[in-house]
Length: 250
Image 1 (spheres, helix red, strand yellow):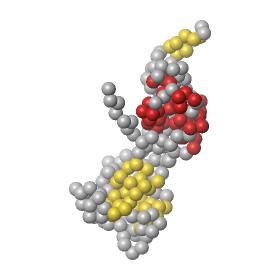
Image 2 (cartoon, rainbow, N blue to C red; image 1 turned 30 degrees about the vertical axis):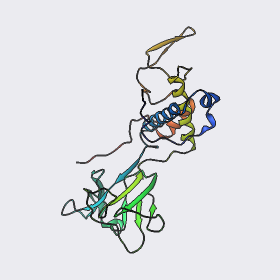
Image 3 (cartoon, rainbow, N blue to C red; image 1 turned 90 degrees about the vertical axis):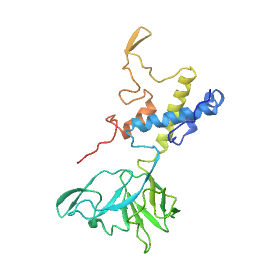
Image 4 (cartoon, rainbow, N blue to C red; image 1 turned 135 degrees about the vertical axis):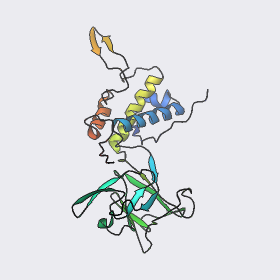
């Protein structure tokens, strides 16, 4: 039976917590699957705040209402973005002229862990020469502004297109790399029938005469039961939320 390749976007790994069994007892496909599963698990348990996959958006300029200044909205995420002008609240598609020259600045949906690539007319631009990143803002360098229109029917490899690929979360740090490796080891043990520290999905167990009640489901309280891994999760998601809070306005 052919096993599909792991999906998702694996986190970097700190191999210092790997034991000899990781090297000798598990083959490479199993290691890849367990790292991918550990990465996806931690991405979910941190409320999607850490790690994840790169996201490509296609900025284009659009006038939303007659009273609203034009600004950038994003073809990959057409949500309204609130802002204020002269003390008045507007729900529109961009920040307007109050943020500076709109043709040279683009505010990306936060958080922005990194900007991986910017393409105009299918050509990859060079950071530091063609643009620079200031927090969540991508600023054009030189006299050529950002395009205000593009053909969304074409792939971003063609003339007449504009795209930005970035990480819409926080990057994985050293603590995250260690936590991911620790969790991957336990997944490997569970997969091969070894002694695994992860809780099973049972209601109760009896161990040495003591009864433990465990809720069913996969990490129902947002914790794995592994001290090092849960310490990392608590830093980014202390309330164990399923996702970051958002304010939606029709």
